[in-house]
Amino acid sequence: MNTFCGTGCCAHCAKRGRACPGCKDSDGHPCGGRCFVAELVKSEGLEAFSSLKKSLIAEINASGVSGLHVSDLNLLSGAYVNLAYPLPSGCCVPFLDDKSVYLGNQIEGAGDGRCFGVVADPSFLLVCTYGENGKDPELLLYKRFKK
Image 1 (cartoon, rainbow, N blue to C red):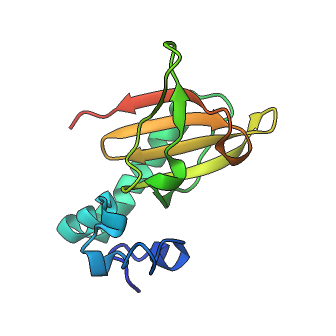
Image 2: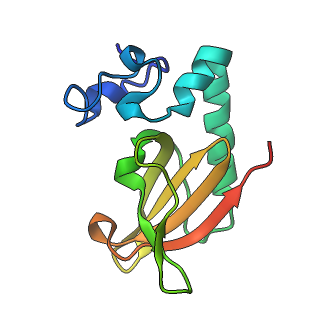
């Protein structure tokens, strides 16, 4: 296995081999970006990763977003989850780094054929809804965590 965290994320990544040598071969910087999970596991161990994941799931489920319940988070490339959200000014702005790795999940049931999307790392939580293939994203919650 070519990961520090043991999730097998490299085995399922479409970028593996072409644009990315993998987690361990890139020393925790797949696709040239940052994988906070690799950093965490290297410095504090697998238990710290498990604890953080549980904490983020609890934070998401306590967010007050109606109909949202998360039971697991997966490692996701920023390039797959970095949607551009419309702001009141009319601009559409992405909040994430395409090259970094985050914890997140897609949850069906946001209504009208839409899904919830959750993305997090130790510094923030983002909750949104979107249509098929990420169409028409709507930012519901962006919360920064104090360090």
